[in-house]
Image 1 (tube, one colour):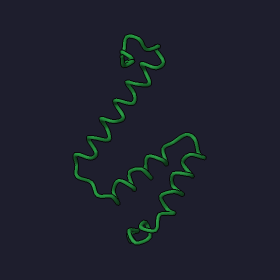
Image 2 (cartoon, rainbow, N blue to C red):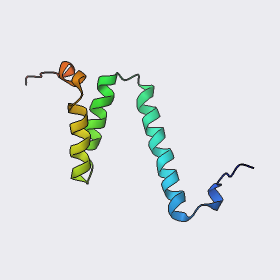
Image 3 (cartoon, helix red, strand yellow):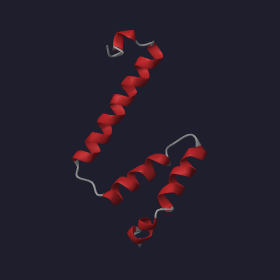
Image 4 (cartoon, rainbow, N blue to C red):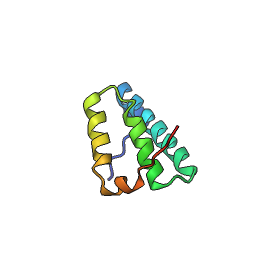
Length: 80
């Protein structure tokens, strides 16, 4: 017999978290529907990381993206 949790069986905090996760996944799917490239996905992740309140996590995410050897070849120079 498989154990499935129903939404009704969740605590209010768990239910809220699950609904937030569903909404987050829908946002990701909307972004993916645009047909974004791998470079664009990385930039979106970087931009979202910069919005985090937890600075340590933001730094680690940005560092992980910049440590990627592919990221050097994808940097763009924009002159204003």
